[in-house]
Image (cartoon, rainbow, N blue to C red; front, side, top):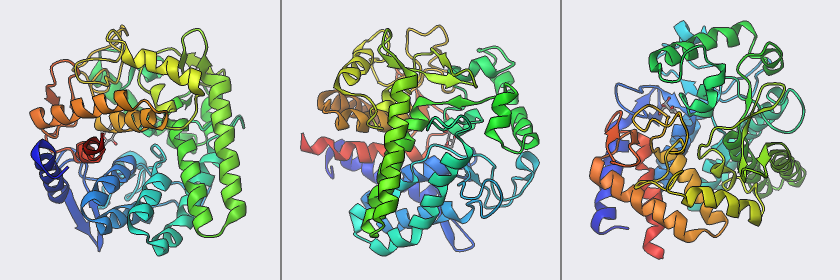
Length: 407
Ligand code: GLC
């Protein structure tokens, strides 16, 4: 890890995080990228924390603490951790309030806190953050499961973290190749949410954007497991059992409702009718990260992954399968490679014993970043980098490279 390419990459990763880090009113966080992304994002910061753990665990704690500062303190959304914190107070034009957005992002908070505990043994940090975490996961169950099936519903593409994925095209009023039109649609959608009081049931009833997403729910299930472990550390047995039960319910619901036995894949469900969104993306593979599939289902998922006509490109994993008509590897979230997605897919493969596949993706990702730099996203065939070239979460390459020394 601390020699050769990996050692050099680790130094660069550390420098990227360090130069993107800012301190505001005593709180410190890492901007996803200077200029392009000045604010604090929820799942980015969870990933930053995982990288900080390799260098300076105190920074991981600071990053996670900063996320909790803007947690919703009251009202129907009490407990929600917003997907964006505007530390400069500039959020009002879009969200109607200065310091935070009114939607969330994939729930990786409990996993990040648990990883921090495992690295540091700091039980006081667990005790400090646990009530806020619990409130966040309770909020997801309380406010985002309008049909009571255990699956949470996202109400804006931004909540998925996959902003412009073709998974969401059916809801948009712009054509799949109209990137600007899609961007305008996403901004307009915020006004709809605000009018509906962010009520998932009302939005769903009105035929608005409402999706039970397979990756979000799988991350949620893994998060509930992590929450249960944190509860046990604090001696809260009943709460641990409740979190476990909920995790099981989520997994069962994903299997019951999203699994397509003919395709051997999981699909997101759109709207009240739970119409399957048959768009082949690695979101279905992220079910592995959530411990959702059984062995047989996992094997079928991995068949898709290994297929060069689908996901096994020169640099895996493309965010849309090569076989999809909407595949556009140079367009934002429409086929390019992302550190966040790769991390989730790799950890999922490891969980199911697909060590060789996990390793191959990690090695090629290390090669990609070494060659192209710390870009936001990459072309899965040529390796060309796009977006900012000092994107913080691409530093996840360090966490992925760390596992490679051992094989
Ligand atoms: C983009 C990505 C989102 C990420 C944010 C900050 O909006 O789609 O996933 O959280 O940038 O990096």
